[in-house]
Length: 77
Image 1 (cartoon, rainbow, N blue to C red):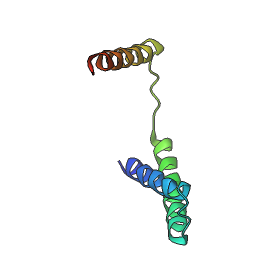
Image 2: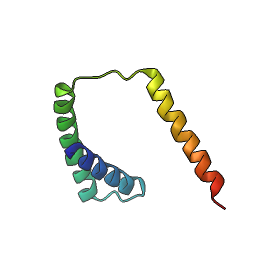
Image 3: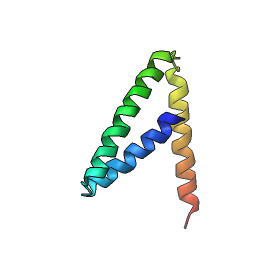
Image 4: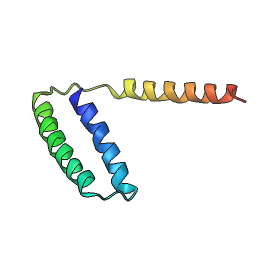
């Protein structure tokens, strides 16, 4: 969960920087959160055991999502 929250903060800080808010406080917090995220990510990656997902399952989920989206779009006025 901490990676998700930290990633969200990073995206918000990146949006501020992208919008032109280049204050020292924003830049400093972006650097601080970026370093923390990198440390946490490295630790999580080292502890993770990858589990391959069959391609057929991935395609089925993507197709199902596309069909549901198309059906939902068709119903809206």
